[in-house]
Image (tube, rainbow, N blue to C red; front, side, top):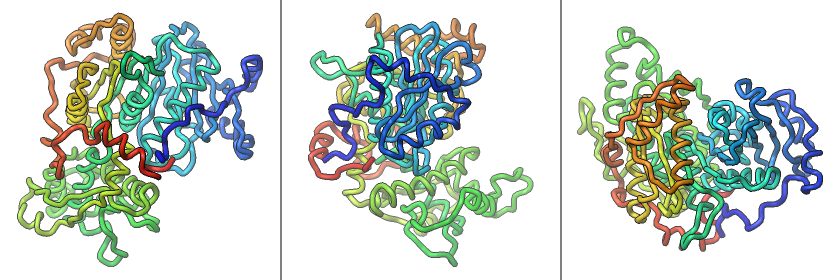
Length: 492
């Protein structure tokens, strides 16, 4: 069976219609109070309906906010603006966070971060997901759950849009394929989607550059693990019982490369190590630490906690280049091949088929240092391979951040997507860029579009593994076949 396929009916988590508004009398003092409000009922396997909560500061007086916990244990937040335009944005957050439980503050933090959507008149709903750790289909199911909770409480919106940021872009793209409009004109739960700085290469290929970082780093630094410590294959990220912390990892990265020092304070060996690691992996210096953390702690989560110790990663046949001695590097770097069943389960959980039947607009920073812009090329190739790229418009900006772009651009993107859905006129990168100035008059955060930009193929940034030039990475036929295998994928 498919571990994460949503049942036909999600268990009801709000009171009947006759009692809905009377249940909203409890007011939270702040974000942390959510856990105290619903903790007791969830300990008994019960759920509380949405309760009034304090809105983020910049929404005070502009919206009414609610929080709660769904039947699967995922905390969520909802905001309804005073001047609601009747449409809903359902948000999928990035990460994944690695805590064992759902974080009661995460969805409220996300509401504050994406308050621009509410200021533009959209209701907003976001889930913290039922647990931390990897699980794209799980996160998609929890995103759909909060949409259903919204509908039960406030009625069916005029239009519903999915929004995903970073890994949440992967989640929202999975939402589109799973819950969006069906073929032959069948209307699904979502009318369109906005994906911003999305990790759109999927799990089976989208982390290969971090696999490369893990092995290249160890070749030069030999301190993760040290020779005196228990050894383990590097595809594990970190051995299961390790107590290493992020602070310890930073110290080892600093020891080897001096990355946190000004260049003049690094030793010659540190500078050469740093130069070689960056040149070979093509990872920006400013995000080297965060990528190494992912290739350590998130890889451990994927391998040990989600795949039962099986290896979904490989680098056989990859030729590393750009160092001061490529021959020595390629002769000495650790090599490994993936377990086919692990690849299948990670692919089923997170890869995209391209089976899209609703408008999808993407916004991506050209110099995104975390989710490289070539992820967009992978996504276009995925939809093209599925003959669905007519549903896709991609826009790019001359920005260099991953977690936050211009509010004017977010507002403009939502307006362009909404107009596409309502009027049926597909925008272009040029028309989206041209409409941004009106929103910048409100937000003053700038418009940085480059309508002429086209990302290079994903393989130009990340050395492809066998079969890595074909997209989609998982076809719709493969998805159907794998879904019939008992226990396929990643358990929620």
